[in-house]
Length: 178
Image 1 (cartoon, one colour):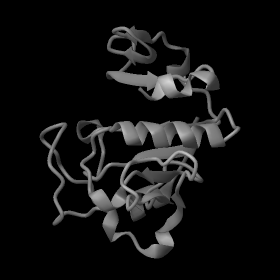
Image 2: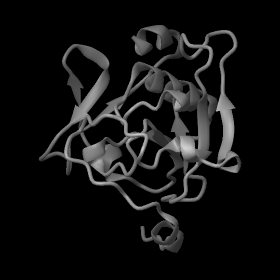
Image 3: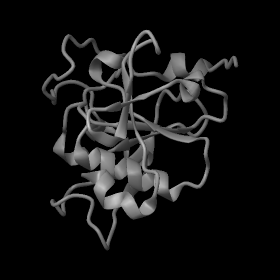
Image 4: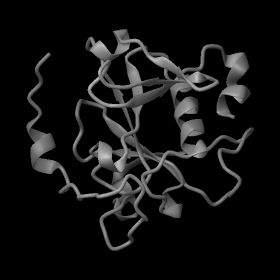
């Protein structure tokens, strides 16, 4: 598959350089609190099961200024807390909830760390439809330790280390989130 996406090169915010996978959030650098209101597509809230303990947390889905593909947007958990780009249980919960709301097998939610080409050190995930064949789907992932729903793939089986979460049955939702 080839795809010319001129806008990604022209509109993309200048990526920052990182030296560590876990760097502290820096308010002086560009972050998602600087989004314009028209870049926020929607606010996420679950009335029967709050997403987080803090009622003031604002979880958003926002426009991606440099999309890989049409409809590529960003999920930003607790945007107001200014968390660094490190995956949290709340982020995993939001990703699981959003995945359960979308009934399309080509929909994906992705996370990349600071050393995995993340361009902003503010917790976010990517959501996009990817209707193309992916070699990664056919690769063999190994179960990570004793966690039955967390899988890992590492070189030489893939170009870099990656992990995946899989919820196989909605009745296991609470266990999955632990």
